[in-house]
Length: 504
Image (cartoon, rainbow, N blue to C red; front, side):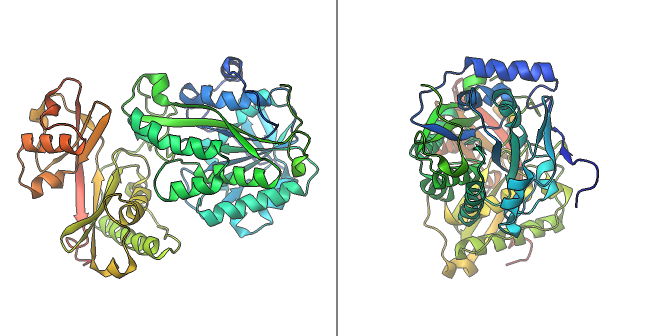
């Protein structure tokens, strides 16, 4: 029930992801739009896919899609974005009155928003999902500088499973199709995070091809199999599916780039894509459309280059976890592996501590009978610790390319180990490396490899052997760590297992 005062979602990343003043923001967005080179499209614009990192890194890519909106008119824009800070099932369809940026307020189309929410409880309004979410907010200034007099329906996805994607796509398509309004669909996503340039290009090429082929089902399959990465994979698929239902039949990728193309640092990059979805000229589109148009220095903290699925890093330093928190994570990892292997809904950690919410790198290792059965992790702090453990439990059990997926018959034979990683530190002198304390990351010649601290300890390696074997893991020759073109980074890890803590 609304009170007499409007509920306005105020900007939270103005001044970090994009300029905080009206004049500076307008000038920056207009600059990106003016530099864009619109592509001749095969039909009328029905949707847009755009990135959501800091404008300094992704603004130029986003503008290549948004430039196609100049001169067009839409009544409402439905923006679908991923949740980076709040975990929840389904999607939150905004229930307030307006979204605000330094360029002003955009009113919410409450009629359309209400119609989508009425499709089920999964689409109810969750204020916390919107309050600090940047991935939706950063799209709004581009819309404000290209369109006039539009309303908005902001949707944040907490659950990107295929069933949730299909349900939301159907709800959006049905609600839009019942209106006589001209509606634009927008998906917000970044692609792979913190790989070297060559790896990022290979991963992102899979998504570029799926988007160019207007293939949301193939995109979901690739994401589920771990063949590619996109924090907004669900929103992309929702917008493509809904647009297709409303008459769209083509997708044009207008630009792909990485943060490294801006910063010049190719060691750890984030991928960005922009695309325009179109329907045949004059097809009407079930309520969508506006008529055809005539034919990085390394980012500083909080400057807008977000982490893997977009999770912005916390200001709180990681100071270790307690024994009780270790037990919580191990039980959570076990429950997640069991659910993933059985094809059940993944569990959620309902109660978390500050340490478990702190972004940390981490690995989940699965052993069977004393032999490795799967091990995958994030090297850098890309998500809150409990989310990292959940993601990596799924990946280690089902998607480690060295092993077949874990089967249900094996579950009782598995032992789970978790490694929580400290931030990476560049090694200036190899004498800094302490075997047993440090893990290593070695990068060079477009390749990289990582070994956890316990690997060297378990094999009684000395420092030089540890360095050599990390080179081998990277696909480099032993001794390559001595080359000036090769970089070495070290990290420490808190390692704990079910066996160690008496759970197995």
